[in-house]
Image (cartoon, rainbow, N blue to C red):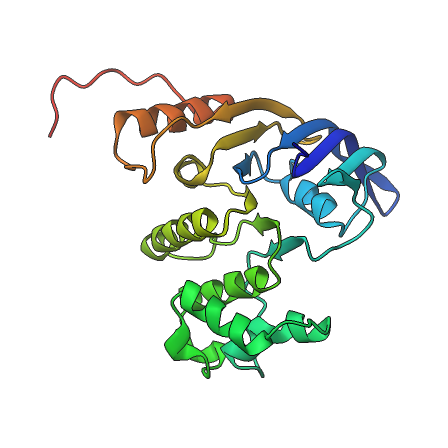
Length: 258
């Protein structure tokens, strides 16, 4: 089986005003097709840089990045990208935004049918003719997700897409992302700072160190789906990740429960 994504001995640095910043160092990562993987670590540890390397929006200084066995030399329709901000065009309707990429690359399929399918998938069919300013932040993120999915990518890259949402909207869209991932059978790779989000969605959580970013742990999440967020096993995984990130702490066992 060809892996969906492979990074071998990948390093990346940036130079600004003569100062060199090492973002990533010696990254080895293999992601199997159809899996859901989350990248988590301190701010500035290179998580988003890894996503951009996979997307072909940046290139490593050393090592190799491959998608489906082929070296990544630039962006491709096989890799969709969903950003933290929805970045919808304010002058286009929701349906026009979703279909924009398909029209830009002169897709030969039935674009209107594909857009309608995506609107149904994310629950926005009744808002097809609305403009972004007429929708809530959560609905705009759903539209952004639909736009990223419209091109039928085999891998979807999510760069902390829910970070700006309130807690309840965030949990609702997490469940939607999980449902879509299962229905579409695609590979998803997500950057997040939310430990519970990583445990809820992921097959594997990749924990990274502070800059220069290195992988310190690969944690398989062996919980059935849908995952109860309040279960002891869920808390066990969250606590383990927090310990690796040095945000854990010894807590005395309570003598009683309120």
